Length: 174
Image (cartoon, rainbow, N blue to C red; front, side, top):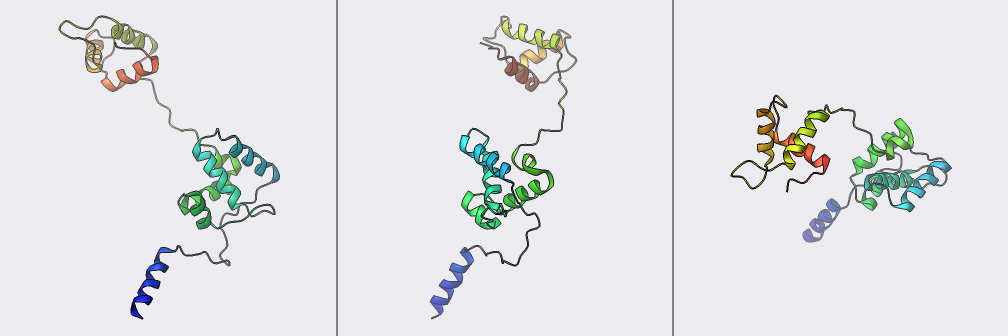
């Protein structure tokens, strides 16, 4: 008898708790016909980023309108293999900012200042395309950075900046 009881307790611990029907959602999703059509088109094309497709599926499952299934967060999370807090966050984003806020990725707010201007980048590319220093087979990123400082093209330069600039210009160091 004791073995059956412990087996049932073990089984219960593996099943996620169901949400009570009386629990009210803080952020209810009610999609309009146009929004549902847009989400179905987005999913049907399949060319959007995976995150956008997942968020679209979450919204369609969470829809509590007349044409929506109104699934619970845990049921959606299980079906789409995401965490239930992701489902809750998508609901919140939809309630706060609409469909675009919930599906589309937010553009980064931070602006990055360029370390080299166009003229300095041209010096770097020309140097990278030139013959390497004596005793070397090729230019290294660190050698390029040091040489630009020696030539007084820049005051200070890291090899990582050299790498990023050369990667953007798609130049080959040989």
